[in-house]
Length: 66
Image 1: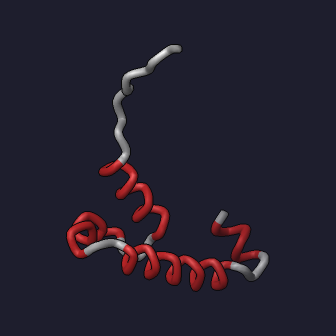
Image 2: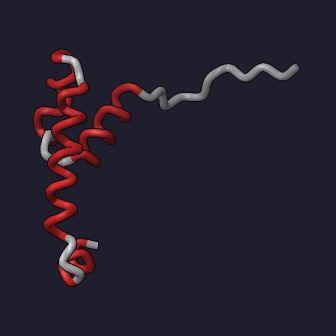
């Protein structure tokens, strides 16, 4: 993907947008949540995945059939 965007001259555009998104995500998090994303604060995809892995329940819940 990176090579394709470079060939089309769009890589810098992606880089700028990714920086903006990473900043927005970082600022949207509370101070307590920021400690989880300090190591990946420059990559919005990694920020999202880190927060999802912490906060999304990974075990099955109870299902009720009516």
